[in-house]
Image 1 (cartoon, rainbow, N blue to C red):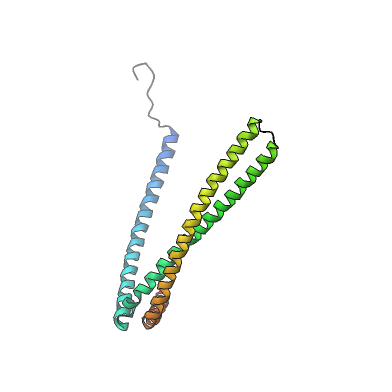
Image 2: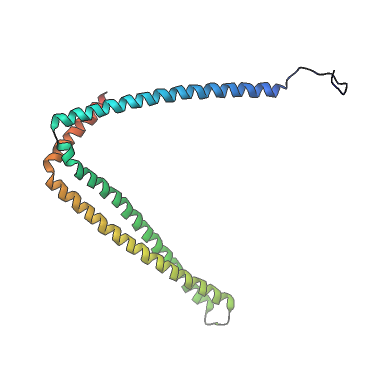
Length: 190
């Protein structure tokens, strides 16, 4: 008996039992996933070691062509990154140009609505707001245009560097492509 005279029962709320079962199941699932993660990490490490060994063997087999052609591949990577930036700058310019056109249209509509009534404060406020939007959009468009031009110049320079390196390192690049295609083929087989 308890202090207040009520009998004490040793029964547990069934909801607690259900939640304990869920907790046990979740713990089992976590443990299973941790084991799977360890196995995947081990397989990755083994694959990385095998790939590194294959690349080193191929590099030794064909000499320094891979190292000699590295500047070309790095330049191509840089040129591709600059191209992405150039495309983003072009999209930004197009968006700013569209915003500028829309703002100019808004000014035109506000001027038409004002219709020579210079004393109508609501239309005057709308015209002022529209004019401010045109000015802001013009600044944005100008900045986006400059950014796009700079990106284009950088892209042209990067492409020129790639072309120059391609001519300069033609033999090494050809050999390294052979190596890389052979390596990719052997990785696909295994």
